[in-house]
Image (cartoon, rainbow, N blue to C red; front, side, top):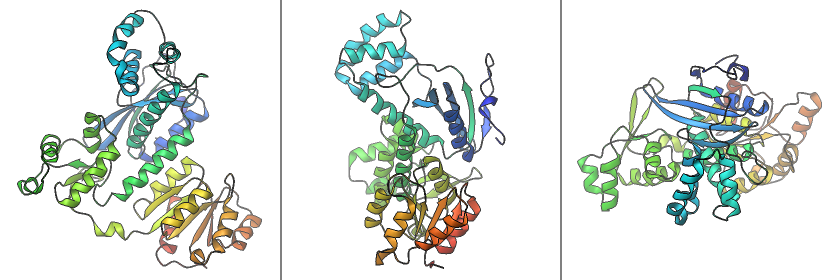
Length: 401
């Protein structure tokens, strides 16, 4: 997808074919949508295995995501789903009213406004649900290659709040990054979001004491469905399902499979001890795009923790020992220079390797970083190979030069 721009997809009056992209390109495509404030529907074909895809959809309004999901929806399905999720006691009574309204050319926005005015729904409930949908969609798409098609008309005019707007991008990506940390914590047991639970062996089934778990494994573990497929069918959060499965793996009640880069598969039955020995890197940066790129570049080499400001980083450092700190110089509130200086005053962090990241490449800035105790100084945009080399050099026993 080299050289791709938003102009490649916004061609009025044309039905465009699906365009291939690599995993690292999707974040850049989304960023271009935001910068150019586009409105429309982005359809994704996410390649999770050599012969298997997930279909996902993101709807945009003026450069902001308003909805994410597994398929295209119309206004009737949108309203029914929202009422079922937020106010299930109204689900049956709303159906007759909705059938009458859909005869007329009311927009989704008009119907939602009416329900909010009648106190059936609130804008906060609507936005909370939409936020979760968008997070799940981004989480399932952003780490894989695939194909996309962009249509310059949204299928539903689904905007949020009384003023009509999209979802906050920074909040979306910070939530995605936080969830990825939880996925990383169970990766030795559940090897990724596209992991496939295998049919239980008779020996495994014999170990399961609870009938409900035994029934669940026999029904859903067919060697075809991914954890996400099962979660969607059960209408549950895939991460919550995966965390339950991680406990079952520890008990010896299940094993699962993940695709390799060649499209073959590997069975995983027990925790891989090597995963626990990976160095732990904390990245502190207020840019979700930078954080996503760092996590993608380093995920095979270390466990990556993320914080979007200095206070979050301090709280995390108080609870979790880390082997290396990646620290953005320019952040709101306490900046990277102040945080580095604060940490160096604590004996606990006197020898912690700290790599400062900045868009500035001036001798004064480098000298200032050295004065407050930075171990290394890297300029943005980051070079992935150089970043990996720095981590390998200093993490796990690295020392201050």
